[in-house]
Length: 120
Image (cartoon, rainbow, N blue to C red; front, side):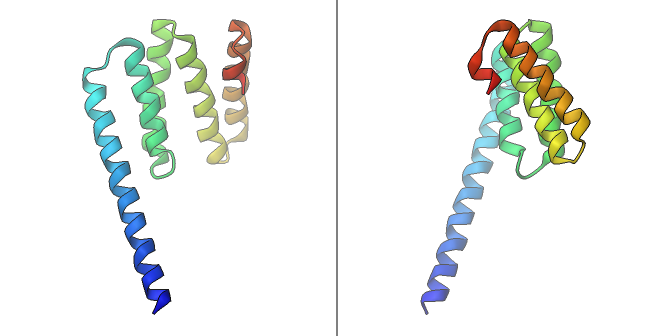
């Protein structure tokens, strides 16, 4: 009896979590339509975070949009975060040279602007 209650409770918690994630993604995708400039870069980076554990290809596609936009805007924080996260995508896929290249590049840029928080 206790085992079935535990199983049902766990299923409910997982369902609630999935619904919350889905709602968050929907909200971010709506925000993306109206976002401009650095706000758009940040929204793309948040969408990467939202998809990282469930759809790595989609997560990467948001980074592939965020990084060039941040570069065009000369938004250093967005460039650094995007490169670091892209490095993590490559590492997760087992492409260690590309992963380390992007992470090292993000660290160099963070050092150039003296942002210790972005180096971590």
